[in-house]
Amino acid sequence: MQITKTDIDQLNATLNLHVEPADYQEAVEKEIIDIRKRATIPGFRKGMVPKGMIRKMYLGSIMADVINNLLSEKLYSYIQENKLNILGDPLPNTEDDKPIDFNNDTEFDFKFDIAVAPEFDAKPTAKDKLTNYQIEVTDEMVDKQVEAYAQRFGTYSDGEEVELEDMVHGTLTENAENGIHLDDATITPNYLKDKKSQKLFIGKKVGDEIVFNPKKAMKSDAELEGLLKISKEEAEKFESDVTFKIGRISRYKKSAIDQEFFNKVFGKDAVKSEEEFRAKVKTDIEANMAQDSAYKFGLDAREMTLAKMKDLQFPEAFLKRWLLATNKDDKKLTPEKIDEDMPKMIEDLKWHLAKEQIATANDIKIEDTDVKAYAKEIARMQFMQYGIANIEDAILENYAAEMLKHEDQVRNIVSKVEENKVFEIIKSQVKLQEKKISLADFNKLFEK
Image (cartoon, rainbow, N blue to C red; front, side, top):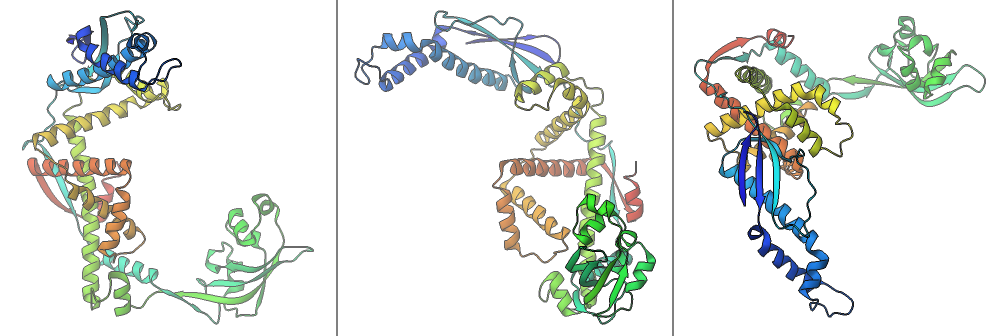
């Protein structure tokens, strides 16, 4: 097969493919023989249908399949062998869109449009400057985390008299004929917006009754719906007073700072004193702050890298065609939507190309161990969001294994692992300033 490349401009080209009988005859004959072996046609025993009949019946479709497969194979071989850094995939050229007669023609010409990535150099150098922020962990931050853990691992107990933060359980009856009656109503005085209604509950005991107007007491109709178990429309019209009879007073008490508490947070005997506990809390906060710092570094590194590519031009017309051609089933992806999103797509494409260039230049490889370790870290962070710090490694392994059963998640993890390795390369090759910073000042960096 003859393949020639015609450059349209620096970013667009056409590949011209000329197909002759020698390119496809052997494959076509093999397919005819295979079909003959399987064919069941009235009047002939299986496998005994004349080749001429098979050729006459199936030649067009056989030729189409064989040549399409041949085109695909040769196209990508040519691109690989000639080291063409293309964007997207080749698209059939529609300018000379002539009908093809696979039954009668013997030679064929095909044209495919390709888009070539622009040349650039986005690799980091010692002339580049970036800051690596070290967020200071203060005693106040440790205090807040210890308090959060103490609240999380606290317990409920029955109270004798209602206090502001208590949950008050009882029966609620609307003071109207055929009104609402609930045996399982719950109210927390602190959540009532009306201070007078709050005071009606404070100091009351089990068996006491309180008469109040929930419409005035609650902060919104949505809360009224929840309390009275009524619809939005009913809540809008509700005006009655109700009588609330206290059945139980439930009080939450945060955990004592003792060995049982330490075990709940970090596992049995992981720490054995308040001093050790606070030190472990500080270490965990520092690890989380390091991740926040790494996130900021990544943003800055990407911005620095893209600045080197700001004047690059891309074959936007081709990219729009390619997006529409490869997403035909996506009804939301219209030409108008692509036009709207194209600036961001181009920025993402630039970063993708830059990452590939840096990864290739530094021989970055993604190992299975990297992927599994990152999946475990995702699982660990998910548990941490719920305040669960002492997760056994076996549990994290199971969560990671489940995660890696899904191809889309594996692709995302591989991409993120590669990106993190690229950031480490950038950090090692630029002029890096280490800067200590308070959490408040660090957060201000994102206000821009």
